[in-house]
Amino acid sequence: MALIKCYECSREISDKAPACPHCGAPKEEQPPEHGTATVTVNEVWASISAGHSHTVGLTTSGDAYAWGYNNRGQLGDGTTTDRSTPVLVSGGHTWASISAGHSHTVGLTTNGDAYAWGCNEYGQLGDGTTTNRSTPVLIGQMWASISTSQSHTVGLTTSGDADCDAPKEEQPPQVSELLKVAEQGNVDAQYNLGRMYANDEGVPEDMVLAYMWWNLAAAQGSENAQDNKDIIEQGMTREQIAEAQRLSREWLEAHPPGGN
Image (cartoon, rainbow, N blue to C red; front, side, top):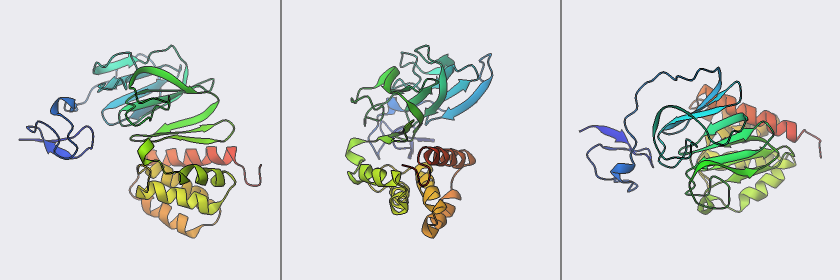
């Protein structure tokens, strides 16, 4: 008997079990064992993002490729066929950024259009449905940045408004209210948003967003935010910290201190 990780809940289960004893995901839904491979696209890569069992890459020419597990259409090639080599994401778009979630993917084009594809069980694609998509679906225009987590997506518009496509049953009403107050530079609202994301309080745990909000609050002199940021930083990767710092900079650019 060997142990594998459940695709849905990431807990270890027996490879002989017919279904995950923790969340009930059937054995046939579990992805194959991971291996190593050489990515063979004859282009220069600008960035790479890894989800739970799929990977996406952006070339310097703005093409997006994906490979790996594709049971929910997260590769964006119009199929649900697993791929062991990179396939071009459908749509013919020129991408500025791309981000892989647990089993969904989001991308931002060079003209500011935001697209999403893959698993949509909790509405994380932001298209108003819970239908999985195997090709990119437009979810908004005039976006400055967009980022995924396990089962939700967050984006920042060019006007500085923040939006969140989170699991409906997990998103508390106070999130939208806190965001409105945080936009005005309220340090308590920023601190509380960080606390919610760090402690899984009504929203899925997301240390990148927790770091971002505590980083903003710390910049305004919150010692508690600084202490908490230092603590969670110890368990984060360099890539996660860099992403959180990038989101912080973009937020400050959209909401300069003393601005309207």
